Each structure stands twice: as C-alpha cells, then as structure tokens.
Length: 105
Length: 116
Image (tube, rainbow over the protein chains, first blue to last red):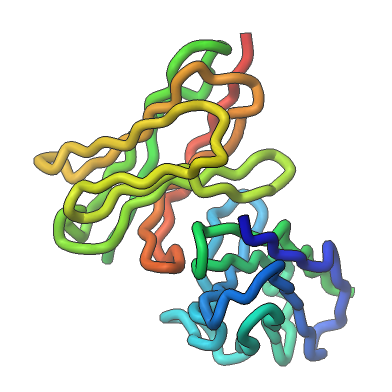
C-alpha cells in the first residue's frame, strides 16, 4: 500500500496562512486529493487531483504538488477552518493519510 | 443534487454478519460513478472497503481481514455491504460515497459497534 504521511497537528491564528503537507511513500503523479472533516461530520472534498478546487469550496483553499510531496494551503485561515484535514491518493488502491488536526489560536 | 444515506444495525455481536444499506437519491447507480464503502475507526483512520462500478463489477480491499460482499438493488437505487464474521476491530463509522479517483459525495455515516 502507498503510505501517506501527514504531521499530526498545527495551530495558527485567524488571518494567517497555513500549509498542510502530505508525503507519499511512492510517486502518485497528481492523484492526490484533500478532505476536511469537522467533528461529527463526514469528510468533505476540498481539492482533487492535487490542485483542482472542488465545487463550492472557497478560494482560500488551494493545493499543489506532484510525485511524492503535496501541500494544502489555506490563506487566510478563518475560525470555521478548525477541522482535521486528510490527504488521499488514487494512483494505486486508495489510501488516506492519518490526518492533520488544525487548531486556531 | 445527489444524496447518499446509510442505514443498518448500530450493534452487532462478534462472529455475526453485518449488513448495511446505502440509499441513493438524485442519481442512478447504474448511470455512472463507482459506489464505495469506507470506514473510519475511532482513531480516525480511514479505510476503503470495496466498491461497485455502475455496471456492477466489484472490487474489494485485499487488506481486509474479514470477507466482504457488495451487492445492489437497482430498482431501489441502493447498494449494500455485507461483512461476515465481524470482530471488535470492525467497530467503526461506515460511510458510503461516490468514487472517481476521489470521493465527492458522502453519506452522513452509520456507527457500528461490535460487542457481545
């Protein structure tokens, strides 16, 4: 399986820029996708195929990367962005990262 | 707008079978997309279990310890997950979703606890 590694937690202040990283154990081309999950809710697609904004997602969210290193950026961060963010690859059988919990200071 | 809704028992005893239903509205499961089951353990780890294509082919995660089966009832626009010989490790939130490299439509999930 392709293992995706994310940092476990980040804390930022509202209005700042935050970058959440995801590293794949092998190259996944651009087949990396990002989700936001708030407590008690299902995951919500934010970015697909590395850099494409999903429908209805604010332009404050963006994605970049290819191969093994990918980044989800939120700029500027708002209070409502408190959530866990997961990356997921589909170059091989789908796998997810363990998630990065974003907290606001 | 497409919507998915999971249903099933909240509590299952070890060694029993688990049967979950995903009811889809707003889109025919035979018209497109792949239809997938994903579960999330209490540690928040997300794991795909298996999916069915719009034409009815099935693909299962080879890493699963328990055998599963995904079937569908096209007249009701539903697809199903059966997990046999469950153990406490199968305790999780189970989601159905659409799959086309990424998962864009999700149900709200159904919590399943395996306990005697």
